[in-house]
View 1 (tube, rainbow, N blue to C red):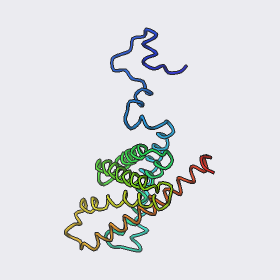
View 2 (view 1 turned 60 degrees about the vertical axis):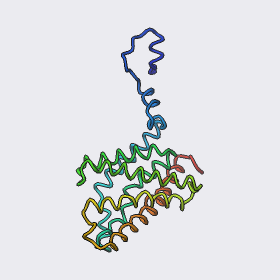
View 3 (view 1 turned 120 degrees about the vertical axis):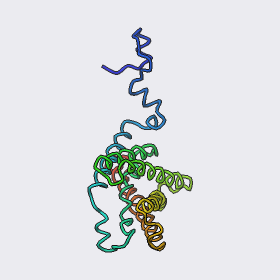
View 4 (view 1 turned 180 degrees about the vertical axis):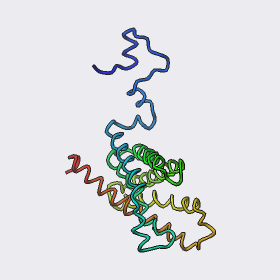
Length: 214
């Protein structure tokens, strides 16, 4: 038995409660969800949940701290926080899925006890918006299908979070400006390689395994 829309129920003389809206109608009327298919939502959800768990539970920065123990060194690995968003964008070709991934990732990190509390949700959404701006820029430049374009988009998306985390940690005015410059440079490079370049390679592998590209 298939679900019937509100109009179909009314046509059959069935009383529909005021404000009633079935799932399909809700998705169509929602500005963001209306742009996504069920598969898009599935991709975004899986990537957001995976990203939340891995970002919270896997201490990638420890590898860098063993080599570069100074403040800001962990930014060299910070791009892994956003790679899930770039994969969501690449697999669905829709920027709205990127925001769904960012939101779910932030919620998972919050539930796992991130030190920033509920603010981590806002940070993920902010990072998602920054990455979206990066992809909009490369689309305008016609570099959407190149490693260079994705790298620039990833760099733009990731570098914006570095000043905010330095401000939250109270490092401005305490540490020398050169350390901040190095940290922001590391964040941009990490975004270029991990979020952008590596994100595109994983996206290509996923599409190839699904038979979407040869």
